[in-house]
Length: 366
Ligand code: UDP
Image (cartoon, rainbow, N blue to C red; front, side, top):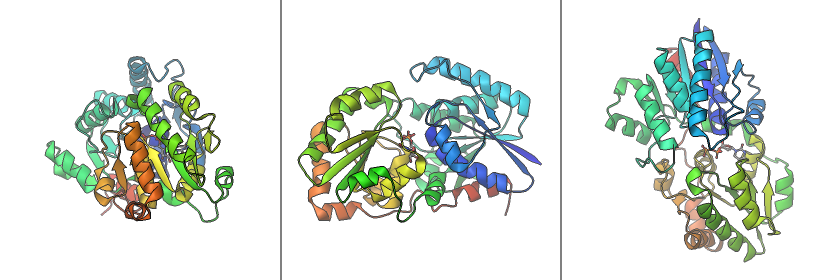
């Protein structure tokens, strides 16, 4: 019986690891254990609930806020070391590009536990954007034995960096597996009721490098686009980070056709996305989800590690300049042919079977 430990701790990791945990738990001859680090204290548990995944181990990082990356990393390393000592897995899996990903892989490296990296090979090749995620994912590559690249381009990045081709597998992204379980016809939700027949912009923003003035400029552009068009509304489920909330409240709280909400449950968020007109976001996972649903995405960042959607025309990198974001948003809202060019679903990020492929590789199924 192979013992596999899945290590994750943030909302996006949970969205992308729960489908894999469930897939592994369906297989024979494998014990799939889940260790959550609780790097995201508030927004992680709803994702676990959505997938009915009960963690086997749960770390307490409550002393470390999001700004204390050093303390957080040290606590993660210590915590995960204890879990490895106790559970003695045959191999471990980490996902993506968070402090948990980095510390999880490093703790395994020190303990001689082989690691698989889910969503390997994403790159901007700029350590400052996104920060510190670009470092975390590149460091994970150095420590991993199996590299599960979601796309051909991600695989090419790894091969260019000298990773052994026999250890790189193109699997699709497990986020699409998750999306296949949540989006339903006739989904009812108070946000959709509030939006009625108006065109709905779905906004998310939380990247560290966007905190403060960049985020303010993006939200001002959204505000202006909404205020100038009576048939447009926007909803922004705010990230719990207090710095994000301060900016969101300051710019948008008094705008009647903008709804600031608490983070949405995963199924609510996916279904609101599926009914939205377009998205403005600096998120990583949201780019993949929206592109798969055929929703145009204005990426409020200077660079994306998800170039497949840009090449296909579904994602547009617009940066954080207020005028640029406003111009791109106005084009989508006012020019139906520009909208039509972006509003088509692409399969570049996966087909819903990534977890099955990863499980087959780990369990050496032909
Ligand atoms: N998400 C959610 N509720 C929300 C906003 C986002 O469940 O209110 C999900 C979203 O569907 C995606 C993930 O959270 O799967 C993205 O997380 P985030 O944007 O925080 O992280 P990133 O992908 O940028 O690392």
